[in-house]
Image 1 (cartoon, rainbow, N blue to C red):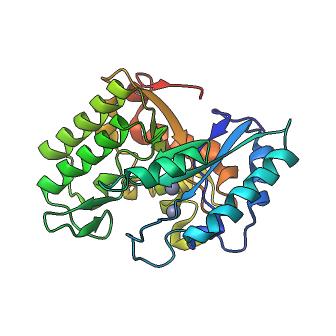
Image 2: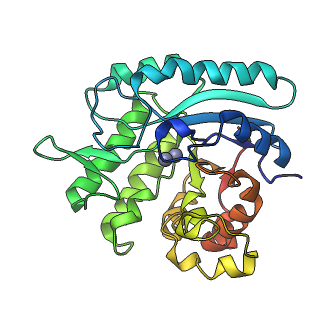
Length: 282
Ligand SMILES: [Zn+2]
Ligand SMILES: [Zn+2]
């Protein structure tokens, strides 16, 4: 097998509670090798020293860190020469959490920023996909992403267009947010990830079960996909920024569909825009 991009830095594990619970870390590696990937990073949803996100089944407990890192270290050694394995976390930036984030950065190879949070005016946590964000809050969301880059926290910005989840259309404010994120990514030289997970969830994993329908059938569901968002990437293509694909693996078989998912992503974005994006090797 050969892949269009031979690395993927967005992989979850059973520890977060919403990935396949019976899938061992090593099974992910076996799928990566089968596909011909040369580098990968485990970037499970980070544990929180201060428990901010109170939802169940979202992330590992703080005490699980050591076991998680030990498991990755073991695989790193076992598969040396076959595939380069890195450790990491998917983190969110919140004011006040800077020191904890730096600690996570120090103990791993990669941090990806999967920003889902903001504090509202009453210092209450608001979460993407769960709460509606006002326009003002959406702008604050972009500022948080910018601030994280300014503080040199993330190595990659995961799904920079996920904010479209609860937005009805790509209007003026959505455009402004895209410019803020892209401008900061250009300034701080942080790559943006074109995330393939929403495509997977609306096609091959529709109704939370893997199906093996041909790609022509899957294509019919593309209108349900929120991100990658064509309008966002059109704006991104006007900036001098680096782009990578990210699978955001949570399930068995997801890595094996990488080539199809990229093909579908490219169809959503359109050849004209894809050709103007600077996909890099990282
Ligand atoms: Zn997840
Ligand atoms: Zn993720």
